[in-house]
Amino acid sequence: MLLGAIADDMTGATDLALMLSKSGMTTVQVIGAGSVSAAPPEAEAVVVAMKSRTNPPDEAVAMSLQALAALRDRGVEQVLFKYCSTFDSTDQGNIGPVADALLDALDAPIAIACPAFPDAARTIFQGHLFVGDRLLSESGMRDHPLTPMTDPDLVRVLGRQSMNSVGLVDLATVRAGADAIRDRLNELAGMGVRLAIVDAVANVDLRAIGEACRDAVLITGGSGVAMGLPENFRRTGRISAVGVVVPPDVRGPGAILSGSCSQATNGQVARYRAAGFPAFQLDPVALADGPAHLSGCLDWLAGLDGSAPCLIHATAAPGQVATAQQRLGRNRAGEIVEQAMARLATALVEQGVRRLVVAGGETSGAVVDALGVKALRIGPEIAPGVPWTETSGDGSRLALALKSGNFGGPDFFTEAFAALP
Ligand code: ADP
Image 1: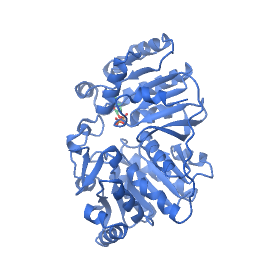
Image 2: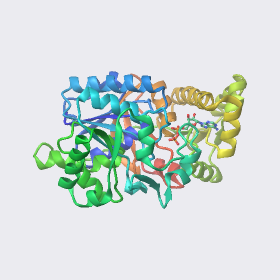
Image 3: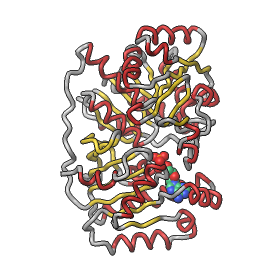
Image 4: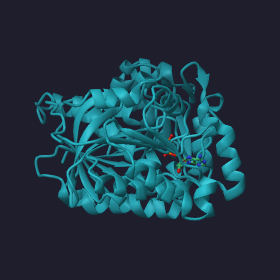
């Protein structure tokens, strides 16, 4: 195993696995540290998908160290800690605490922290993260239900989370090339800095950063930073394949579960509803009031004729989310919705659904857990960062598309089903 990745959420893991497989690495996504052994021996890259982004920091650290141990058992050479390109976290963590723990466990002098993903309009300049032409703090991420991002200065954000001091490799250095980046990282390490935010505004920057990290035992960042890593292995003749993408060979009815409240998902839900497809909105407050709301949804499902993929969503506008959170508390509102989504996923599969789109990283984690999925084979890309995948594990074989909240165009849901044979 050349590259082992520890991803803090399900959709981020899929996004990364897609990036690596498109770059020609034989890549498998496994669910949780316990499933690393399920990865076939030919896997050159293994992405361990966890659901640790919003757990208490000590839990996230323990889960990440378990994943690291499982990857080391398989002889991993380079470790990538993958988080969201919008740096989703709170002042308690979990990016800083997990990065600190992995640095120590791997005895790494320094690691980069680079969530930039220019193809998805996430760029970093002078340590500040932009979403499109807005600072992170002025993007939809300021209203995220679990990890609202209100400070765009990543050196400052990571500094609040990490026990280590945090430095910056600026764009001028990145543009000077891989050697200059390496020199700057060595200089920072010499000053006792162990985490370095790295500027990147274009793919050429990510490739230079990837080359600079040729010998790094630990890299941290978004899926974008993985763009430049396979080339290091190709250059030394250790991978040769060009990714062959095979769509999931799974027939059967489709459905959509959406628990993301991002701007992009709100738009996708509105578009799908407006097109007249069957849709049901879950209300967290009604879910908390007793079993009637969820039973109502299950009855509604049972009455559908299955001719078109139905949509069940808790996706709501920021005002509605705020109301639910005031009534229930932020974490409880999220948990209640995730539990309902997990139950609904099981019910859908029992009713014969075999093609499932899930919107939202935490939501996808809850659904994949409930369905007992162990590993995912990466299939064709629906939208940047979102592939169809095919499950393996104890349950029925499924085609799953796990969409990070912010990803996909307005017609993502219809495009997803149209992309299957
Ligand atoms: P994203 O990929 O957009 O971050 P996630 O699924 O990771 O989406 O996170 C969205 C969180 O918001 C989940 O925990 C979900 O249960 C919660 N949630 C969904 N709908 C609502 C709602 N109407 N009110 C409050 N919280 C909600």
